[in-house]
Image 1 (spheres, rainbow, N blue to C red):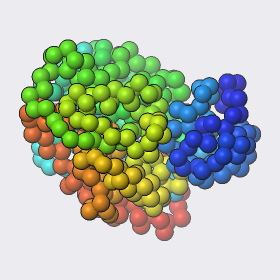
Image 2 (image 1 turned 45 degrees about the vertical axis):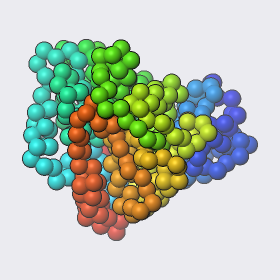
Image 3 (image 1 turned 45 degrees about the horizontal axis):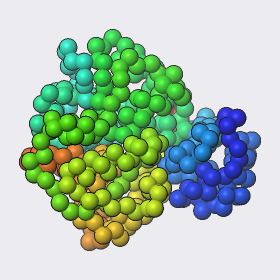
Image 4 (image 1 turned 180 degrees about the vertical axis):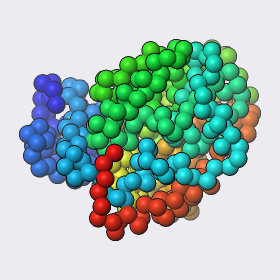
Length: 383
């Protein structure tokens, strides 16, 4: 925590998961600063929103990550977490049963496109749903990405600071010799990691400018360079990525404007768009518990289901995968979950088959088969 902290408690009192008064929150912040025991370390689901709520930019989230890092250095990770680690083999994304056409896309994207100065980065989440990045939108935007080039977002959110720093060094070295000038991201997690977290927290250095795909599409629509042939209609309830909140209110407002340009009416679940709920995946960053992930995911699914919208619009592929997995537990009360790129492709008059139902079911089955037995295993491990 830097000197800008005023110990006002606003960061944790606005948290949707802590249920603390502002006075209690201020007390807990002081405990975290002193490295003392705090209820925050038990209740935090690593949604990152406390940093968005802090009026002074004091990084309360960093205090939580540092405490979790001390825990990791002392105890390591439980065996049940191994299958969820992005750089361990096998893991829940790489081990999914991909169709031949999906594996063909993985192979096609594995090499940096020769001579390309603007490239779409396919991170782990987009690689899990590669069919999303097909169609006319990507005809002049070469795609590049491999599972071994994971941005380390999960390590960061779990407080595994040295593994995250290793990722920063690895990616810095990898991209140093490329000719890429503009790296485009479809995933807000990858975008925030490359744009801010890896350089500012872990010393990564990238020569390219980071751009968010949806921002480019929005500007192209406004400029008349993208023709909306099939104007959409209906109401879409917004689900925001945790990283989206950290990227700021303007970033979130552009996500709404994008859907409105396609013809949709956007619906909110909270009075303040910064106070939305996590998809649930981050809930595993603390306890590495599938039950915690399920509880947080189902809470957001119920929140979305209560809205008077026709669909839930999601711009993070990881959020889409997580919510789709646990939607299977409440299929009759939840709304269709649709990615913004899928909506864009519909508006262009194209079909879009993402395979999300098949992929979410397969990932869920893989986690049950590979990770659940680890709950009985007392072994610990380090990255």
